[in-house]
Amino acid sequence: MAVNSGQTAKGFDADLVRDANGLPIIPATSLIGALRHCYERNSSNSDWFGNKDESSKVSATFGCVHNQLNQPIQGLISPAEIEQDDLLSRLIQKAPVKRDRVALNERGVAKDKAQFDQVALPKGTRFTFDLVLQEAHKVGEAWHALLDVLAHPLLRLGATTRNGFGCFDVKAIETVNWNLKAEDAATSYAHLNRRINGSLHDESYDYVPNTKVKPIVKASLKAESGWISGTGHYDLSGKNRSSINRFSGSEVCIKWLGSGDSQRAEINAPKATLTASTIKGILAHRMAFHYRCIKNEFVDENAEWLDQARPDALDRLLGSVSGPDSGQAGLLFFEDAELNYEQTQVRQHNSIDRFTGGVRDGALFNEQVIYQPDIEFSIYAVDNVFADDEDTKNALKLTLADLAEGRLALGAYASKGHSYVHGNIVCMGELQGGDS
Image (cartoon, rainbow, N blue to C red):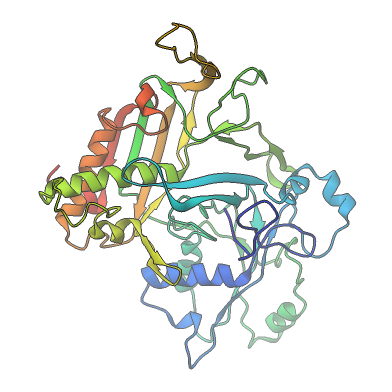
């Protein structure tokens, strides 16, 4: 997740929003804005969040990050406390996690000014915040419907939410209702502890949010041989070999051990990753190919679209940026893939001089690949995503068929035979039906 401040950190293209301690936080405006957008998309009741004539009935506190003992940090703490906490000392870094991003054109090379880095928080980072609804009428199921939105897969916080960032799991919700017309309840509310690291009230209860939203694509794939994606710096075999020249991209993640009040964070060793932006980019290029085939738009010297990155019709699904002040967000929401693997391989490469028969200078190197990892990912979409456009629907279905049947590499170095996959892809919801 990356809630950006709009500023740049030294050596990086973006910086996270941070509190006075230098620790990451989630601004209340970001929480309410994302919650409102998702709630109004799925409910006819939009009065709670206010309008030009009436203020919002819903308010929130900042989201406070947890330390390694699973305690939210609210207010100032000493630098020594941060340094002695393994988790906080990681999160206070300028780049707890850094992803290199690049957009490729139709020729497979980087677009102009399209290479940048994305600073983010590691997976498993926890936050706590308070959410308050002040309503004069009985709320009942409507309040629970609002809480259910917290578990909605399309509720995402921060930047680049279509590219896998901002997803989160709800670990616990504690809620309580007060009738402020009753003297006892009003007194209890007035004496409520304003710190978020304690229990709300003796009469509070745990609520488990419910959501029935399902993805439109659920993929379960296996690499046919070696697989690699991105650029990494860690030996994924755990042997810490310095003799390897190239590694697959990897990231650390936070694992929570124990249960109840005894939970404790542990920062795991880096693990290979397949980012949502990689999945989206690969599918986008193949979708453009299939869409043009469906429309009988083939290469011609006089074709007006030769310099066009992709058909305009796909911008509805994938989003577009047409300038610093214009653009649109896509209607497809991608997620980082889950990778499971047991074995890595080191493969040697060289280039032979055709005249001497020897190795060319500087052209002998090796790389570490993941051997036949299992890859799983899902794609979500807003309602009416295809808007009765059967051509874009079929272009996506043909692309997914290429992926499942081993005709499309889901990773890097496809020209070397790496990263081709096969398996099962299930299309659900609006993606069912149509030709493919």
